[in-house]
Length: 275
Image 1 (cartoon, rainbow, N blue to C red):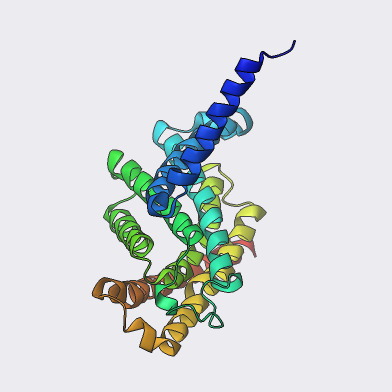
Image 2: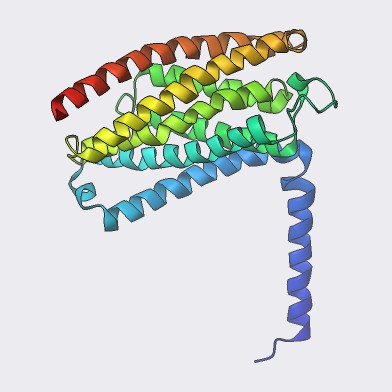
């Protein structure tokens, strides 16, 4: 059936208004931080519901879990998707994008930013706020005070870098460490599903070891070396930016080393049992 001309014209008018709204407001530079945070919060809700829906139909052990275990199962699905997203964004900006390249002569490297870099950080802020809300709601079932402190510091640090435009390169360097999150979540999934003695659990443990070594040990060495080589530019940051570049990565590096020792110890035990 043919559509009346007035209907077509009305539809096109609404379409043009929607495009103007998206272009001039949602994706306009001043609004990107806010829309990206809201987008991150909305994405967390969507992924949580999809994880619940898919697990209900395709994971046999899901229905036998307790209510708290099902909530944590869904929540870990959200953290896994966020980790994949922010790791891809971080690798792009740190190693492939020209935005933070030394070859660029457009201003100090510590003050460079773009709408896309702000958008990526905003989505991450939305995730940290959503996950922090879940932790408070079910405290301490999803994590104790260490999780509250970690998410609070992470959310504040990333939000400051996004709104101020300072130190975004180093923020993305630290966020590359999220590459270990899907494997850590998989370890929990396998354990909860009663597959702790499976080969998949062992392979996942070995993968955690190597990714942790690369993304949470060696990468931090690269970060501190980069800071040393650009110290004259780092010194021009505001006090909060200076704090984020030096104190936060240093504290995380110490924690990463401590956790790496535990990972190594646990992997040795698992390999000994297999033998």
